[in-house]
Length: 594
Image 1 (cartoon, one colour):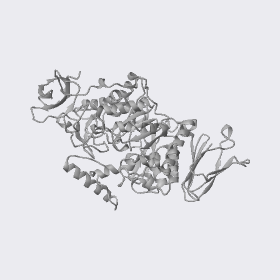
Image 2: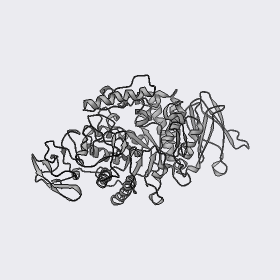
Image 3: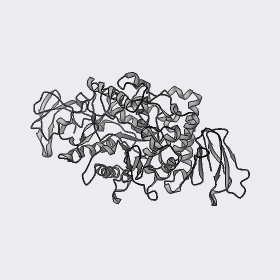
Image 4: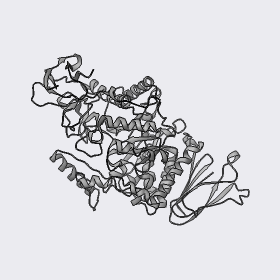
């Protein structure tokens, strides 16, 4: 009932709810909960809580609506008022899907849910199956990445608030698109965060880069765990999301017998059965630990997928030649081969970057490839560069962009594109914030400059707090009128279409992937998935590749399926008895043939 107010505040002696223009005492309930009924309160009523008679009115830790931002009062929101039209939507399975990562605030000039919804037909035409939104939980100011969210239950008001988010999800489902939400449970932002006033949401027992850790395993942790699990279910139930991407799970410390991720996985599986539609969880982790996606019956956490940073690093370093930072462990085509066939490059092997062994092997015979997300660009790998530069500014030629796209979209993993990547967007995507706290804003700006100075960066670093840094990061949709960008867009459409139409390219078996490389005389890599060959030239001179054809029914006269360059030629006239075919590849090109 919308006139009933509850809050968990176990360490205080008195709680009042301020609603409908008056203070109302709350009754103590078991386990530190407080409750009150306020006649006349309902949808649209502003409210807050006063603890132990203090004068400050605090917003609700579970506030569903923050119309005045993170420092304002909470507002009652009745989820039953929204008229959904997706009653026949039963979800879309993650296996076989192509994902698209989107930041609502920079996807369009308007930066709203409604404006993003108006662009969904572009994603349908591209061949996208699921949209992954960067965090939308209410955060300070108007614009930011969303990873410093404060009110985890309230959609960001400048984007369009609760109703705007529902309209976006409803519009996506109407077009056959699943929607995934990026959620952050390893920390909360500092600006506007008053959870410590209510209870032990944080603990000093574990240190994090953001201060005290979220309390998943110390005194009072049961209610904190429930807060997080119920928050995850709220997004899936009340906003009809199809899945959640859980940020940086390696930064979650939980020494309990049942890890919070396992508990969440069980709860989401039960909710999926109750709602009658598929729901899934995706983890971001740099641990290279396949237990995240190992079934709970086999002793794992039972999540549906995890990001594969090693694949990104291997592909990025092979294409760009960069070797700074963690790229020092990557770059060779043999390393990329291992990522394509074994998932983790660091699977218990030595990492020079870390100065120690890292990771553990994936059981490639049992673990399907779709449990790992592959990407060439994402918000982290672009936005955490000093200038937010995309791959198009790093690669020597557009041909290399096409090579990278082919290896991404035809690899065995679940592929994900970062918004604008499909047309080679030239706009940067920088790190930007809009903190209202002057001291915090100064610390963020200065800290960003110091961080890159420590790594030897000598160029300018855009000020995260400068509004121009944000504005430069907004996609320029007029680029689609340019022939160069239109050509890249058509290339991505063709690759996704080929992936969807070809059974071998949806085969989740990692043992069926074969890769040949050469870096001695030329720089080429050929990936074979069944009868489909993806032949790439990553070098600066043309090459002629003799590629072995499979024996049996998959053998025979080859057929060119896609070519990134019109000069690509398949010498298939005289195969002889060798069972091989010669493929002519210009520099920085890729040909796909069966």
